[in-house]
Picture 1 (cartoon, helix red, strand yellow):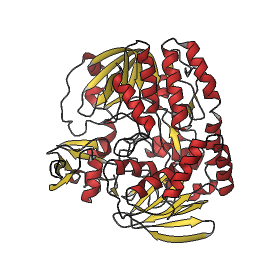
Picture 2 (cartoon, one colour):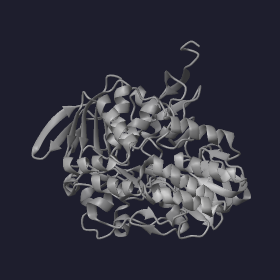
Picture 3 (spheres, each protein chain N blue to C red):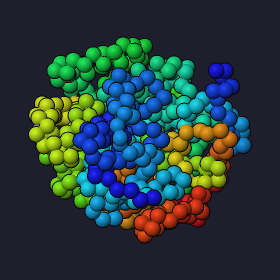
Length: 88
Length: 438
């Protein structure tokens, strides 16, 4: 199988990226270099626990807010946004 | 959705799988509910090489008649015999049971230090899990810090993925680690594994009685200050994996009313909790590692299906392994100096940005929660609770439903009626997010 066939195309903050199957949304966001959210006082935050308990990695996936990106696998055509959460 | 089981197992890590498989082998209708996308728990997280035990265990689960509810998060126990769970898409489930086996595992203990909230500062197991999830670390400089046997395992795994592990900082002193090593002589496989990990990271310094005093960076991590005794120095790095051993996940057992002793669920020799018909196995009963946890899962599965004799036979093997729990506790007990790590403006509660200075003057956890909102955010104190318990010596307990943020539509009777739920959650639908979304 070619690399292209094994990759999943999605967007992070409008930017097209492709990742290997089995990649979590958190990994895609980290690879894209974006923080996952801003804290309530405006600090940039990224994933902490990697197992779905800290809620630092929440992002907007296909318009649905507060999705824990470390617990969700990337899917073809997925639209991930951290920017809606960037304004405190 | 509504379903009902003879035996319901919560948590599909090694313990839950062992419990479910052994209960299903007894011919009972068994449900296995887990909130991760795939079974295996944290230790057998996919996306990396897994030990033979993991493959064997997964295969036995595949071959069993266990009903698998993967990606469902239990958030409430409205009355005895019933749990409520929610899926990522908002679908809600009412799960009935005659017997319950809690295999909720453990999480890392995090301690606040200046800069610990910067992006790319993660848990040690957290970074490991994210790398398994596809975060590229090849040629990245990584500092692994905190305490516990996990640090070596994580450092070895990251090295395997091409990371440059520049330091491994263990807060425990050498003499205690040597005593722990001596204990491992009775468990040669663990000793061998430790030696293999150490070999794998032979390029990195393994420092003891050493910790991260601060992390620095503007919008993300750029370097850390390490401290060892009176010595302090700066190390540039791209990632930090920092976790201070593990704390049991006892939220669901506590919500059900199981007796909790010293942060662990109390069980009898057949893993039954203080509530008849409710069993608990693995890390929630005491941090003892995967071998002990798997054995406990088997015992619980047997006992819950009425195979008391077999359960007691395995229980004798278990009692011989409990020394390892105590050895772990003693070896990796936290140095009191770590209480001085956070500065006044260091956030302790990351959800609500409650800083250390705001917590001074409060005399207990409940008071601090009510006055400052510490522990009141979406993680519900899972991160800052164990930190506050260490920093202030508070008794951190008080669990109320929902134990995870849930959609308003999932709460109360909506679940029982099996009503369909909208796919997209309206803003503000999460009660605990109100402050952020309004």
